[in-house]
Image (cartoon, rainbow, N blue to C red; front, side, top):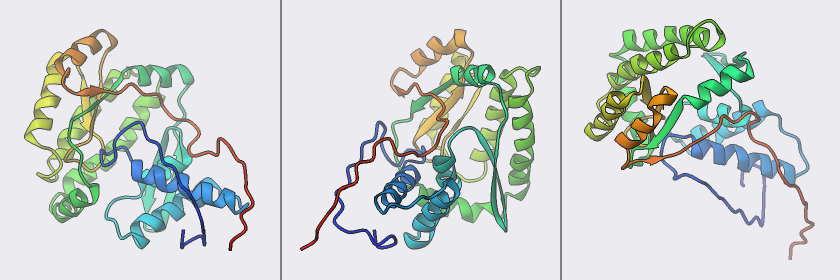
Length: 254
């Protein structure tokens, strides 16, 4: 509010899922709030400006540790490849036909591990370990091209994407002991034994949601294996942040 010189605001926030669970909720909140504030001021902010302002708000003003991908994802929406460099970032849409995209969505299952955490605390611990894990990080970076190729090549089975999730999750959890826990590892193995091809813990780690790639015929078995965890069906979001209702009011201060 200080950043955009906003006054006398009543802000109502509704969420279907809990905070601190690795789904980028804080960044989604920041992006949505900024867009609402700009709209109330009668100003237009494009998706890049909203992402940049949210990054500045969280990383600079609030001094929270972490990456900047969540703010970009919340602002732009859709399925994108985000490339980062010392000069900033570029957002490239992943070109995938609607049928294949729906098929991918239909194979993904989301489960709450039962644990929430502050991602900035995990990020600080992970950052200390990164200097010793250069080879793992470089391999994860190189696998981005492979992941994109699998998604966009209609002649490649999407099951390969599930296998890649499994492999990259093993790489990620090897970066720091704070990324996973015994309970999360146990849930992951139960899902694998029930038929999941692969998966990963979303966000910084330490808790939150597990995402699995599961063949349709195995999905009920995975639900049964993780019956103690909350299953959350979801659909890909295509538009990013948007104003769904706008009724400006005139306020006369005292």
